[in-house]
Image (cartoon, rainbow, N blue to C red; front, side):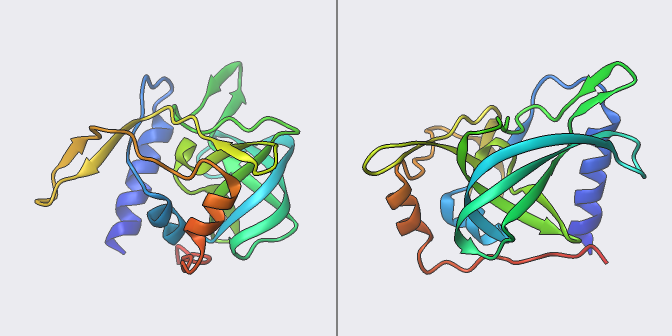
Length: 187
């Protein structure tokens, strides 16, 4: 319950900001991100639509991910991924560091399911673009300041970049034997 309240407060604070200059996040390994996710999918990005969140009155972009293959967990054939971004009353808002999803590209995406709705697990850390070849390569663009946790619990700037899998077969290998979190509820 305490985590839910803290997460809700953080989300409300981010939504209240009309202009933000940077985002920071805890750096997650492939394993950590998989264990926080309901699913990891190989998918093709489909069309996006925009709506207004009924409670927060903020723009939300919903992008279809057409699942080519589930790599971990469970996901439907089409996953509507929700992101806090879009235009409302002539003003564009977004969470800096969130991933850009471009129609037609193939991605590996780490996804959370909360109250039946799908989200990227950890902003831009959760999306790997796929380049095709005999063993498709993966590329990730992380546009956030990453931190790591010291043994005493303090947060420290990440000294060296994480080394996530760079090929689809390496990603599948890294996910093998892991247990995803599964769907979550806030009630």
